[in-house]
Amino acid sequence: MNTQSMSINNKADADQLRILIVEDNQDDMEAFVEMLYMKQKYAWDFKRATHLGEALRYLKEDIFDVIILDLNLPDSTGFGSLNKIREAKPNIPIVVMTGLNDEKIGVLTIRYGAQDYLFKGQITADLFLRSVNYAIERQHLEQVKDDLIAYVNHELSNPLSIIKEGLSQINDGIKGPINEEQRQFLEITLESIDRLSHIAQTLLESTRLEFGKIQLNQEKCDLVEIVKSLMVSFESVAAHQGVVINVNFSSDVVKIDADRDRIIQVLTNLLTNALKFTQKGFIEISVVDRGHMVECSIFDTGRGIAPEDLPKVFGKYQRFGQYQGSRIKGTGLGLFICKQLIELHDGRIWVESQAGHGSKFVFQLPKKEGE
Amino acid sequence: MMRKILVVDDEQKLVELLKIRLEANQYEVVTAFNGTEALEKVGQENPSLIILDVIMPGMDGGEFAKNLMADVKTSWIPIIFLTSLVNKGEESAEQYKINVEHKHYQTLAKPFDSSNLLKMIKDLIG
Image (cartoon, rainbow over all chains, first blue to last red):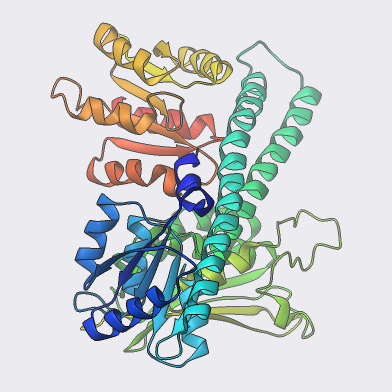
């Protein structure tokens, strides 16, 4: 399904490396290009853009093997530049040039989807060539993984749908009456199908998150309203279990700039966990406006987390409290996904807990500027 | 008058199962296995709702929906998009944009609960 992008990335087919340089400083760019032309080994084909708008136009018109990107442009700054380029062309490798001699920022650019980074002023022709080749190969590997994920995602959906719907129809008596024992068997089977779908779904999602493939649709939304909307379904489940859910809002409306569906996903995960581990007592959800931050916490009076497990809570494939073969079964990816999603929002998440005394999961999200 | 639903999916067995389920709930069902065939059926059958697989060979769900939107005679028809397990990937970005703008376009991830599907249909066409 990605044959087109594969061929773009396969530089062996092209005799020239087609490079788009996005850099607003004309002098820097000239010096840079000149340096590369000195190196005769490779034939380069450059296109130069001095601002993001121009770069996006070229990306629409032409095919490139790699993009060299200065993050700070007249019409866009920081990771915003990277995001916009990736939105336009997710499959072209990007090497970020940063003026700040800071490895941390370099690594962050990779987390945000660049394939490599270089520090301005330290670039030699050899280093540049190595970086470009590395970026292209890295992108190729990412593509292989993406294709696999997309394939599994699509190809699993249909057989799972058919199995689920077919068995549901028998269970619902559409094909004639069934006895109680048959119903029980079908229900166990259907539950396992749901579990299998859930596992596949979280596995795909966590992999995509880890590789920076999920982009947020950020908009202004109200965290209080989101929590209230979730209460509709969770309150009845909790009541059924004999657990009360209390809510506590610092004001009627608490605005955040976030991807609503993703925040719902995080809260659903945290609440499902709280309910899983709380047999009696209560759960309390608080939303507090802290000025430049919005803080949301989910406290439960459940069994809590052992001190040795606390540092591992947000790791991958961590499953606590599942040793009793009880109803508690999960993928061990839920909290890992929560952490990734909150960090994607530039927020942070942590847990406070004492074994036997419940747990409190807290996340903070930055507020939109000027609010 | 019985409400008519057009089910479009390249997975024939799923289409057959959906037909049984929907007919059991007093809907009339017509089917198509690709976008081109589905466009013909829309013209012939005047469905009141379409259940549409997003990824299909040839004309896919997104392209099919764009065709419907371009024509005032068909742009009103509610659509329930059936997406894959993880439904907010690049594959459905285009179609997702359609959704936010049009309230009568909904999405449902496969494998779905038929009770959810039936509720969605009920909300859209009764």
